[in-house]
Length: 290
Image (tube, rainbow, N blue to C red; front, side):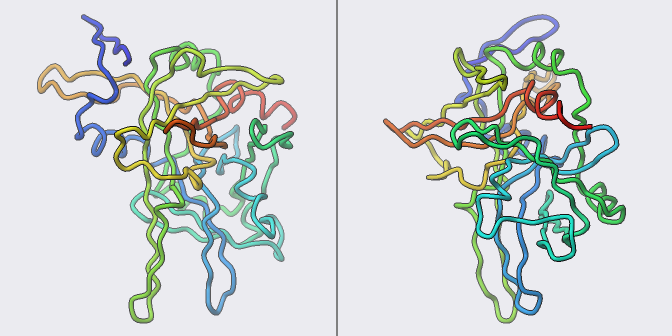
């Protein structure tokens, strides 16, 4: 359960008791502008599309691009190469299915950290959009979250026990391809998974902070068997509020508080999603960057 702060009162409600209208309408609409599916394109004559994972559109100082997990680009074979003409062509899928294609030299990867292990990373990379025309196209469909905000203030507002969470991404389990005549139809699903920060979910290791969310498959509906593809996706912290007029629950303030990069194995019908937390994505990952 979580507590909702209001001007007059505080209400306690269980996540599972939130109405389906909140899940289907409010939650998905709230964050769809920021998250993207990442993919690679091979062969110009007969294109092959490979999903790489999820990313979140961010701005850091005067740079715009995609923050994601490094293994989304480097765990595949061959690894993704950007920044030169002989590199890979990528595509982004933004809200409502808008696809933007990039030539290799139109993007530049800034590897923010070198992972020390798969389970804890650290595993963050930033793909800068260099091409002005392509950046304008992305801005027309999506929104960029500023990472120049104060991490301490975000932790105070959205880092505590009881904060509702939305883990967002494009699960590979929902990716499908079919042919209709001479046309290839590819289907992606932009999904949001609701949770809440509980005691013990936030911890530090080797100077990085982490957030873990428990996925419970018991009596669940619509959860994928694997969260592969959600890697690199954003985790949003929210304040919920109830409308005084119609009683419906909506989202008040919200903030980017994590980037998912790892899933544990399933044990006793449960698994955990691990994300880099607030201090890591706003400060630690950029300490060696200009």
